[in-house]
Amino acid sequence: MTAKTTIETLVTVFGGSGFLGRHVVRALAARGYRIRVAVRRPELTGHLRPMGKVGQIQAVQANLRFPQSVAAALRDADAAINLVGILFERGNQRFDAVQAAGAEAVARAAQSAGIPLVHVSAIGADPDSPSHYARSKADGERRVLEAQPQAVIMRPSIVFGPEDDFFNRFAALARLAPALPLPGGGHTRLQPVFAGDVGEAIARAVDGDAKPGTIYELGGPDVRTFRDIMEFILATIRRRRLLVPVPFALLKAQAAFAQFLPKPPITPDQVELLKRDTIVSDGARRDGRTLEGLGIVPQTIAAIVPSYLWRFRKTGQFDPHTA
Image 1: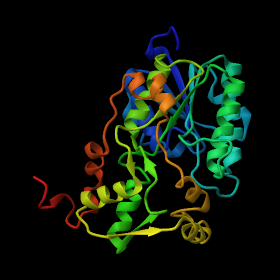
Image 2: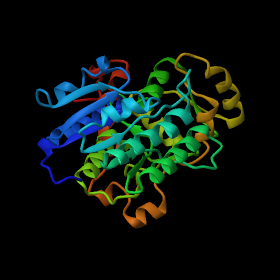
Image 3: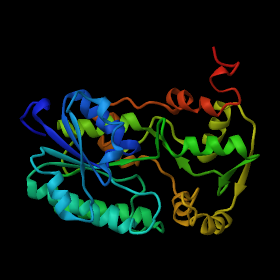
């Protein structure tokens, strides 16, 4: 993306302190880039600094609702990455404000600064979706490309890794509950993708290996139904639990109450998301707009997930089935 060497190149990463952010920062640091992590609370980014050399990774305060802070975070930067997103709404953290207006603010600031942008959206982004989350992601993509037509957009499927909120959540539930729910019978197809692979894809886009103005869809090598994944989780943590089909209508009614918890296990909007497959499209595969198209061999869930779900087994790392 730039004629400078990596050690001279400064990349600003908005939302770099989150689950996916740490994998992006690690991939950038391994290449020698200087990294500016732009977040609302810089004091919570201490876990990122050991990923690079002394002074290579710095944190600054920025809030996408305030364009001046976004512009300041991009000062003297050579590239920008926007990872900011939310899974549910709380207070002033609204889907439209964060994933649409916020995305536009970053894109406009990057365009004004004359630097390239990698924007992270999600598979399932759709302006006609019944899910507000998916509509706001699609609106964010539209605004980003209008502000900067050369931006690269990455759409990952469900992302997994040691700190994920999917495999860990259901493994924790299986440790306590006698049964696991199967929304709509568990027939929805998913294509989980390793966070490290997504981080590598984003870093390669910063390297200049991605086609400008293109939407990439990032999925792992396995397409599995929701039921398949629950069975995999139970097999991994060595527990037997009932798998109970739950109609979407009933699940949505339950989610209407659960959404008011401090960290809701599910919301009505997420139920809408579960009604649709989250997999890489045929068009993206045909055009090479995938991990493989970027030269990345994606990791399987079988290769990664057991390495962090072992703690949910009855005897943890001392499970008799492991050598």
